[in-house]
Structures are given as C-alpha cells and as structure tokens.
Length: 161
Image (cartoon, rainbow, N blue to C red; front, side, top):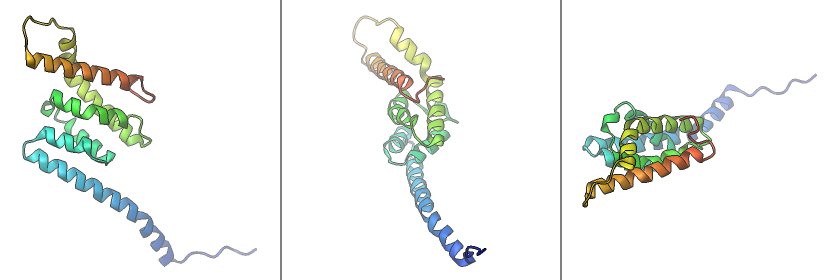
C-alpha cells in the first residue's frame, strides 16, 4: 500500500501563517476600536465612549468595553443604558456564544443598576405641574422598559434574566 505524501514542514508553516492573518487583522481592528473608546473615556466622556463602542462595527469591542464597565457600574447613567441596550439586545442572538453571553451579563448589570429607578419612574405618582427632568427620565425609562420586554420576547432573548 502506498502512503500519502507527507507535507514538508515549510508548507505546513506557510498554511498556518496564512490562516492566522485574518485573525490578526480582526484582533488589530478590535484593539484599535477599544483604544478609541479608551481615549474618549480618559477625556472624562464616559457617555461618548459608550456611544463610540455601541456605534462601532466590532461586536467584540462592544463586549470588551462592557466587560470593563460591568466592574464599575457606578460610572453608568440612565443615558448609558439607553445608548447600549439596543446594541446589546442584538448581540443576544449572535452566533458567537461569547458575544451573546457578554451581552447577557452586561444587560444584567444594567438591569441591576437601574431597575429600581425604572420601576419608580414608571409606577410613581406624577406630580402636578411640569417637571421636564422627571418627564424626560420617565420617557427614557419607558423606552428602556419596552426595549427590555422586546429583548425578553425575542428568540434567544432574556428568558432567564
């Protein structure tokens, strides 16, 4: 019986290097995106940093930024939640399990941080007169409530949250 020819070491190394170029490009893109978000964060613009992460095309960078933010939830605001939730809700149905799990954890942190505020804003009494700040907060809370309910109802959504 004839044995199949064995590839030489040089051709095997060439194959491995060619396969790793795509991964390297992907990681370079992610690093660039995360560095951009970090630069905005260091200027003191947390909301701008989150908007940059949520608006970018790299799902991995969004997850990286959110995993850092989950460690400092006191840095988050209601506006942060409004900015991030749509992107995180989309990531729940990602085919990349790491992205789906990261978005689930990020949403859990946001819900833990803001659930009382949302509940009180939606169920609390509406004082007489016009309170623009309270009305704006109530509108944001209502939008977040609807978005969370939609995420819970979606396939692969937040059923276990």
